[in-house]
Length: 348
Image (cartoon, rainbow, N blue to C red; front, side, top):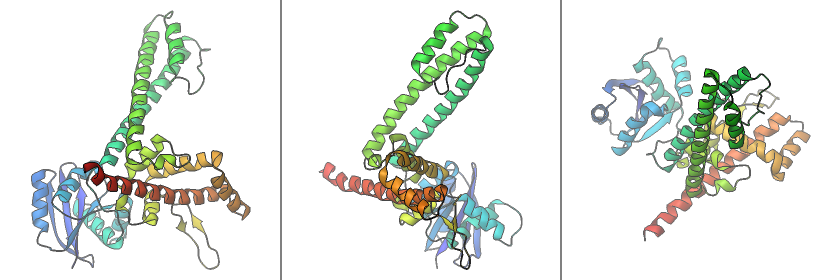
């Protein structure tokens, strides 16, 4: 009998609930979120020979626990939070607690046998960290640019740089030169903001080159997909977290939120937008689709053909995104296979 160990992870503690294949609870334990606590959980679970761990996919909380379980040779699957929440609402148990949440995670894993299997961190994790850090810098720069615009407006209401221009060095140089003739605290703060914007822009550009180099090493074929630049490819690689954990292209499409959801009955066959899945991956595929609509004739022909059949442009775009998720999946699998096969040759 396979026993599923549902886990509700928190910053200081993890609660584990074991259940059988029918979803009946067999036992529970709460351990500290430390290496000793993780070892205690593994020893407690050893009483069941056939077992797998189901962990709510909150990797900022569960990453260390996942790594320790994988190092101990355990099988770990990741359960999306939305799936766990839906299972908890459908359960007969009222209220919310760590054991209730952990049991909901285990039952969700029983209901969905094709969940992604957790893997140890690799190059994709490093790419994700770089992309996330760069996005945080861009967000900080945007806030600074918005504040700088109000400073300039206060100094001179006619001073209005064109949109999207405050990241260009020559525009910043002109602003800094003009601020040299201004006095007062507002002008001083504006000069500081100009300097910080310039500093962030330089660091963001350096990170972009670093990301492009890493993506070129681990996913070169992905960069050859029309409309897929280095940052978009990095987002896809980082969010996938080892594409081999998906059993097929359909599982990846569900993860990406590009698989349409059926909403038909009787003679009316319809599908609606999938609002689930990883929204970062979905946004990356959407960027590729929008770019291909401008520059890639096969994508333009596909959308035009479906629109001629009575579909709206939005529906045709969803079909294109579904096709693109298959292309992305196949391409990343190809890159991973090539790297794996070339590793022994390099070692020899």
